[in-house]
Structure formats: C-alpha cells, structure tokens
Image 1 (tube, rainbow, N blue to C red):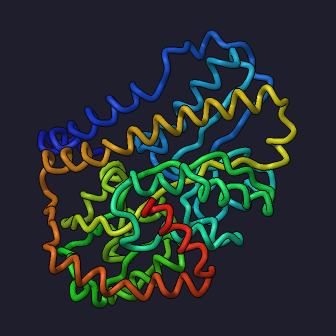
Image 2: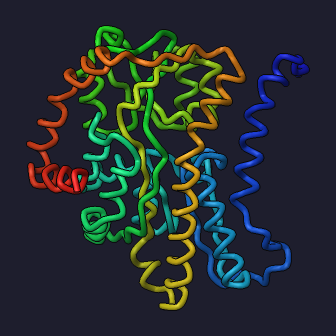
Length: 344
C-alpha cells in the first residue's frame, strides 16, 4: 500500500481538525460503557457521513437518549447508507425493518407527498431563517402530520443548507450547463431544474456519487458545501460554483406502529431528545458550511467561483417554469401557503 505523501497529509489536516471539533461537540460526556443493558433499541439509518450536520445531530440524539434513559433505550445509528440507502430506506421504514430515518425532503414525493418537493424549488428561499418560517411553523407541521397516511410519524425538520454546483468547470449561468450530465437525487423538481438549465439529470444514490464523478459517469452535481467537503468531492471535481440555488433539508421520521407501541413516557423522552438534537443540528448547519468552505480554501486545489448579479438573474429566469410546473402538479394552494409563510 502506498505511503501518504507530505502533501497528502497536509491536505487532510484541515478536514481532520474540522471533523474532530464537530464530533466532540456532538457527543455528550455520558459514559456509554457504564450504561445498563438496553430494553429498547431504536435503529436510525441515514445516508450521509457522521461528520455532517445530520450525522452529528443523530449522534447527539443517541447520546441524549442514552443518558436520560440510563441506558434502557439504545439508539443505534447507521450512517453512510451502511444499513439502507436512497433506494430502499423508505420501504424499510414502512416495513419496520428500521425504526427511524432522516431522509431528505425530496424522498417524500416518491411515496405520495409531492408537496414536500416545494423545498426543492430553485431560488424559493433566500436564507435559512426564511426556510424555518415553514419548517417550524404551521405549514411544516401540517406536512409532517400528513405522513400518517403512509404509517409514518413526522418528528421534525432539520437543515443542511443551500446547494451549490460543482463540476470540472465553472457553472455560473445556463449556457455553462448545456450538455452536462448532472447527478441528482430522485426529485421531479430537481430533474426539471437541471433540464431548464440545459443539463441532463442523472439520478444516483448519494453513496454512489463520488465514485460516479471520479469515473466520469456524470460531469457534476449539486450539494451543500459540507457534503462536498466531507465526501471528498473536491478530489474529483476541480470547480465549485457558489450558486446557492436551492435548499437541502431533512425530516426525522419514525415507523408509526413502533412509535405508538412505546410507552407514553418513552415517547416523551425520545421526542424531547430529538427536538434538542435537531436544534443542535440546525445550529451546526448555520456555521458548518462556512467552516467547510474555509477548509476548502485552505486545502487548495479547488477553484471557487461566485456568479455575478447578471449571471444569477439568468439562472433565475431559466428555472421559473419549474415553479409553474410544480404548482400544476401539487396545486397552487401549497405554493401560495409557502409564499405567505415566507413573506410573514
């Protein structure tokens, strides 16, 4: 096996410092080894790295439940699609093969809740504070409550942040996208966005994305900077364009039968721990993308571009039909309610 060069080691040091600091903040000083044997186990599966906002929130949730239940309730976290991935995690939850998930909001459209796809709309939200007017308000709660139709319990939303475009060239205006094969997660809105920009959308699981980029199966993708950094996509993509064109968030959900079978006191303990963990995760999301961008700049090797106001205007104009198309599909009332919440 090849010995890492001094340059390789130097390249990895910023990432290690960033991730070690975040991981230390996520885990409480509870001594897991001292806990009593668990009477109840909650398997929580997700598809991103442990050192992302979602991964750290999951670890925080695990630690809080462990501490407050005295080890009686054990949360086992399976990150990086180690248990289930993008293609099968929702079915696994509905069948009871796992007790909790934290899927991206795009995935709810595939199981009968296309209103969740409004979160994928390009240039709908200017910042996270505006997003939270929906996710922490009446409209967000209504969306979570509707999940009961598919035997799910919606427990809360969590931010990752805003997505940016990456490739081996700048992607700053529609002309730059023509002919590009862009990896997306399964979402009709995101597919329509890429087509509106002139690109060809290619749906791939998140866990397969870096390899597909390295093998040139796809030419580029979109991600919050924290995902771009923690997945080492900067090693296979030379250019990151700070388009901040769309939001990426998650919903933590549970299997309804499992949730209802828990004692009321346990539901209260788990629910409270999760709310605190989601608040912690959102605090990380506010800052982690900035830290990841700084780490990318320190590491070097990635050309970072910022679109000009005229370029941004051309991008916005190109994707306007995506909004109209979603309104036709889910009903204008959902978008009207979202815009009212945004403007409130």
